[in-house]
Image 1 (cartoon, rainbow over the protein chains, first blue to last red):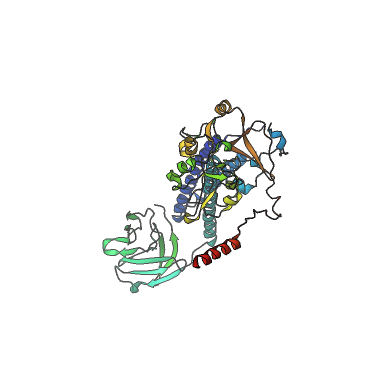
Image 2 (image 1 turned 60 degrees about the horizontal axis):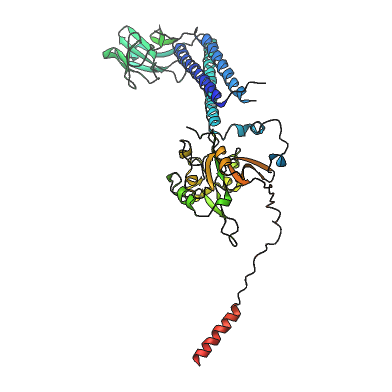
Length: 74
Length: 181
Length: 220
């Protein structure tokens, strides 16, 4: 018996996931702005770490979204 | 006696909701489900923006790689020494056609050159030699004319400095120095 | 704020006396601009004055909502199907054509479908719908199943109907006789037949002749 969430529970879950995704997106925005500023100022050491960090943030976001779609399929 | 059994038909094991096509389930009739789907779609939009930011980061990475590959920058003649009076200025392009730069003669023996793009939002800065600064008219940003560092206003980074070389009465631009502070 | 689970709507068409009180009460509400969302159907107007009140049946799988191209018809979580949302309705008439009970009313002049929503502004706070409140014979009854069983022991509440191959389960119950049998009426069976109208006999030629003769007599 696969546990199915009630509609209220699903709404709570989506609110929680949306909060996390928004925080990660804001973090990515800050990283992009800081990286661009650094690059234009000549600092090249920051570029690769922030690119990897941004990719990790996106992977987390995509995973959370996949989970949201998964709880709908019964 | 009316009974339901008289009108029984075989129903599949899935509920009617599950039998629906994907696009029907994405536009639910019930309000609670509609709220859930609306928020899920907003999350999807946010994840797409996240992907766009990743593309931005990798674009910077590619630009950096291409810049490193370009190697040594060319030498370009700007002007002869006697062309520019004390306190005068001349605009030129270095390294690309659209990279506008400005050469300023502070006194008889001092020449400085910087990129003309303000480090705030790339408006052209205007040299004000008598006041010892560059002024960006867009948002009232000021840069020190001697070292290109921001004095006041929105800019936070100094102007990129153009490295100069004097060769037989002609001033040449030979490199760009990007600075963070 | 939801409709209480044990309160249900019951219609007993045999009790309807055609007084139109429900129609008047419904049209007093401003949420549908003074237009009544309930109407009375005359069963056989030529031979009888019997009427049946028609309200939205609030189906479990509402056909009107399923066919709406603009997603304008929504259902609350207590099962009440709402009237069309004004920002979305395009007055395409799909719901009017689709509803097996013929409930949605299209107001083309302001491009909106309107239908009974079981007075959700009243039922969600514990009151009864307007029509059920004013019905003098209580053909429209809003109460618990226990009340109906106690008050009307000879009636059986039914909420499943079959239209062709579509079996519809509704929130609104119709009260039928306890010992009745389900009637299957094939509405398309008579489609290809000739209509049988009532022949009207009016001796107009004879009446005319009579009239002229009288006039002649008068002249003479």
